[in-house]
Image (cartoon, rainbow, N blue to C red):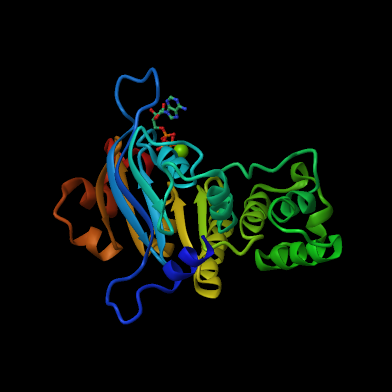
Length: 273
Ligand SMILES: Nc1ncnc2c1ncn2[C@@H]1O[C@H](COP(=O)(O)OP(=O)(O)OP(=O)(O)O)[C@@H](O)[C@H]1O
Ligand SMILES: [Mg+2]
């Protein structure tokens, strides 16, 4: 497993083609009881070291796609390959190895309220490594510092944090294991512009300083434009377009044009902008 992950990380040497860390092929997700699939044949990939932003209207399937990428749900059909490994049929041991190199910052923080922030941050370390308490304390402080939180935050309960602090703490927990892949669901939703912008800077720093490949689901247009290397636009379970901001701007698709210029704010697609 480790060999596969290392070879994908470095990419094909001498090749023009960039290594893909995530490959999604014809992914269909049909929740039982729903009249039609939520994801209707999604194809997308994420290159090593890029920030891929997933945008789309409410109910378009963004969180569903994210849950597939982090193997929380199994696809109805189609394939998801992470670091070269097909998630379908992946045994428990390989899945455990894969989870070591994937960090997830959930929308609401997903902290255990009965534990201090520090204990929450140590959870991935306890799950994957055998370290002395002192080592874990040091790693916790380092990650809190990286996300610009005071080290004393470790002793607070999650309920004592502001919205912005909680998002940062969730990010700190997601990077405790120095993952190769980071997934963030709405990292800056509901925050004021300055705090939101600082979180954007943090995500850029994680890509540049720690060479992470990052998938971000966001409603925030300003944030998406600032951090995205490429953007995937989901619309009612299908991909409208994948591209850089410049490529999206050059599109003659009226809905994408409206979306980027803000005209879409009055329209169905723009309801989320
Ligand atoms: N566990 C589930 N069971 C049944 N239907 C579901 C389930 N999860 C999501 N859905 C349906 O799938 C569709 C897409 O949901 P999803 O949460 O992926 O959308 P989203 O793009 O993340 O929306 P939002 O922007 O509101 O978070 C919705 O119609 C939702 O009702
Ligand atoms: Mg969602």
